[in-house]
Length: 71
Image (cartoon, rainbow, N blue to C red; front, side, top):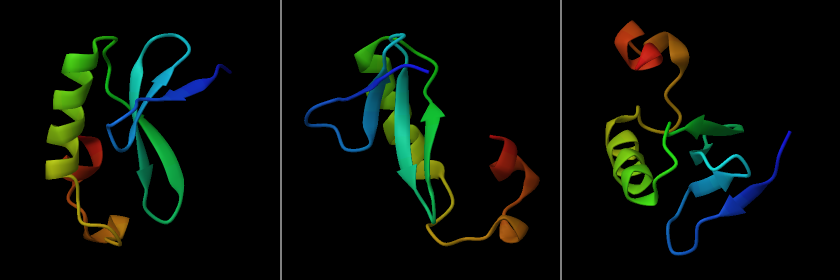
């Protein structure tokens, strides 16, 4: 299953023991979303982009568009 390491000074960013970076999200329940990279600089940019474009907290799935759900 692997272990997780919190990236210091970057909120919501974790690295899995396989080297891949993940965003740790809280929205009713805790989840991890792969940022699909092993490079810290790319992970930070993808995390910023994802957080800027995700639906607001508390928004239920029925209100989200299909594009938002599968993006």
